[in-house]
Amino acid sequence: MVSAEKNKPTVEELLAKAKKPAQLSPAMHRFYEGKMQVIPKCAIRSTDDFAVWYTPGVAAVCREIAADPDKSFELTNRWNYVAIVSDGTRVLGLGDIGPEAALPVMEGKALLFKYLGGVDAFPICLRTKDPDEIVKVCKALEPTFGGINLEDIEKPKCFHVLEKAREQMQIPVWHDDQQGTATVILAGLINAFKIVGKKPKESLITLVGSGAANIRTAYVLMKWGIKPGNIILADSKGVIYKGRADINKAEDPWKYDVTQQTNGEGRTGDIAAAFKGVDAVVAASKPGPGTIKKEWVKSMASNAIIFACANPIPEIWPWDALDAGARVVATGRSDFPNQVNNSLGFPGIFRGVLDVKAKTITDDMCIAAATELANFAEERGINEKDILPRMEEWEVFPREAVACALKSIEQGVARVKPSRQELHERASAIIRNARESTELLMKHGLIKQPPTEAELLK
Image (cartoon, rainbow, N blue to C red; front, side):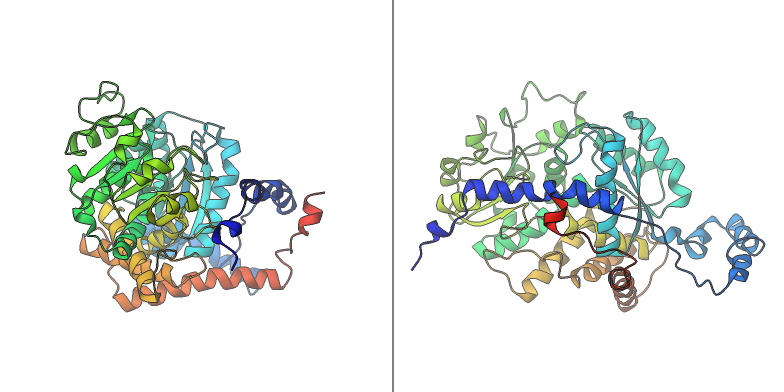
């Protein structure tokens, strides 16, 4: 029998595989000249129909909306429009690369919105880094959109923008780097704890990295029921504890607030100290390998859980974490088991809140989505290497949409209140339409087949 050790890919093979998408991507983007387009959804039998869709007929629709602005959700596509708003200051590990350079990422986000959630999303990259200006722009866009997705905005500014925009607007505002990541991490932890036979609300959980993702994850975990004192955060300087001199309320009020609530035992020390005896570690920090050391994993409690979410290289290779005693290991990569991927969250969540024309997205809705993601995976079977749904399991997205829509109704922020069955049928039909439309355009050559890999790499 060939040993598992011999089947492990080499570091060189993994790095080569990780680099391949970047090698292909420029030529693919140049071939298609972008990823998204706008096409009609109404019938055009002849140019006579323009009298209905545009002038003079459209004036009657305008008068209805003028009398009742909420009718814009019924008489236009506003109910399905989402703005993907970014200032380009924290783009996919690239940092502050500017709004133009951020545009390909926002287009990619729009593609996932459409294909996975049936949502018509528009990339909007701003030439301002001022948080209040970003809030002002979002508010100015509100009459056109049913929701706002904030994307790739640096910390701590992103917290301010999310908080102020949610306060001032009557449509859902969401920051995927915060809420989306927290949603999928919670879903994964729910099932990971089932696998290891521990009660999460009685366990110790360490979050390595104190950026937007893990700060929001801490809030969502606490909202879900984890005791604040059972959560430990660590950053590059070590364990985060109340009274640490370099963390102050004026510079980063959100990190400061978490510091005041977590780490009930008052643990101090370097990052290694954050691992000792804990049941689960969620890392959203510096790419590895070696950011998390095997000896740290060995110091954790038995049947440990490791989520090493950095890309393209996780903080620790999965096999190293397993060798060190971890039982369940997740990463951000699709070529390893248990991918923690935001794409499992935002398409279905927005589908749900758009279908009830909700006024906001709350952390409770994130928890409802996480619970449904975990339930979906558990129903079809989970094990140490399969704790979360995968993107190709498209049926999960309507279910997630329904869970969020029903929570919106329960919390009194939905403008309409369809039944569970109506919501599921609607979400399924919209998502199926998006997928089948793409397939049809490809079949008829209206979306061209891409060149071969060899041609792209010439």
